[in-house]
Image (cartoon, rainbow, N blue to C red; front, side):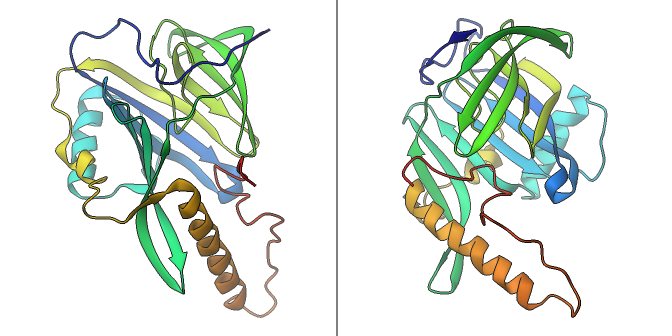
Length: 257
């Protein structure tokens, strides 16, 4: 077993010519929230990466032609959900849209934090996903224990959500709650970057706040939502106890706590 600390900003190998797009579709299962077959999209070039979710309703077979057209349609209809992410490699920041609660007011804000580097542990274990040989790696990150499989033959330090920084594209990731797996890969697309995707993170349209401050407001939003759900529970209903109000979130705890 080898232990690496891989700097995330050393992102790309000499694989692409120019600024062409790369587009990966993942599907996520979250049994804790009874969500299955949720499609997640990763679109990236050398300067930025975008990761976002929409609810497909059913599992579908990957097909590049309809998938990219469908992506553009989703963006046009503004159906992006679930805290979309933007990684701006020129600025070195991650931007994320989140719900923020303060003084009984709920708003959608844009958080920012420096792009993180991870202490990945790379293991000598291999299998195959979508025809690519993949290697196992593990990570302890913000309250979750991740096991991922990355493809050294796809030389991008990209992956689903914030699971980045490995010497190859992450094609599968799992912890006790979440399972994320690539279902479609298309590299070096000769397509224009979807204009509406960048507009989702228009800094002039949202209040921009430090990530740590936003987490405080988001946790307050989760607490208020849980309290409201308990208050509106029908007589005889059995509440689901929560030891940690963030236990269903991707980020459960933080390094500053």
